[in-house]
Length: 157
Image (cartoon, rainbow, N blue to C red; front, side):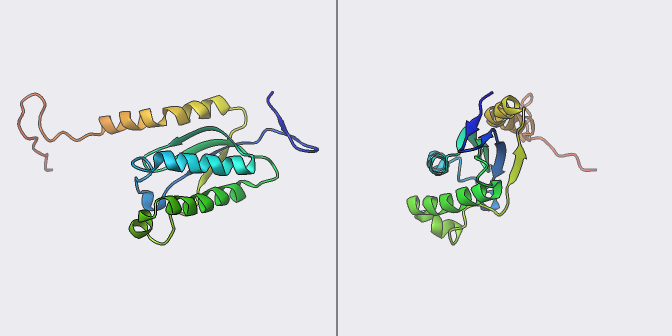
């Protein structure tokens, strides 16, 4: 069993975190995806938080992290969202004018304790983009019939 330790403590605290940019703007996936990942990684290293798995989705972020018990989950998420927001706007000054007064992340987050399901959640995070793309392909609306080449008429009931 892979346990970490502090002075008088052995611990194994893993959490699945999900948070999104304000109004779910899809800026993460475009120009600044690499910068957001680098910034979050830097902030986690500063606090001794291990990122087991992470993925920047088009409109939210999934992170599987191991947080030392000396920090609460809300303290860590507040730190990550607050500091990363300042660092993102510092690095990409043009975003301040597009997206308002240094509010990059929306309020709130999702957290789940991992327990013994580490492998399942790690696989879920890794496959999230693939699953989203498959779902998007299934839900595409056909405007031209692929068999006849004519415009599709909507059924009015």
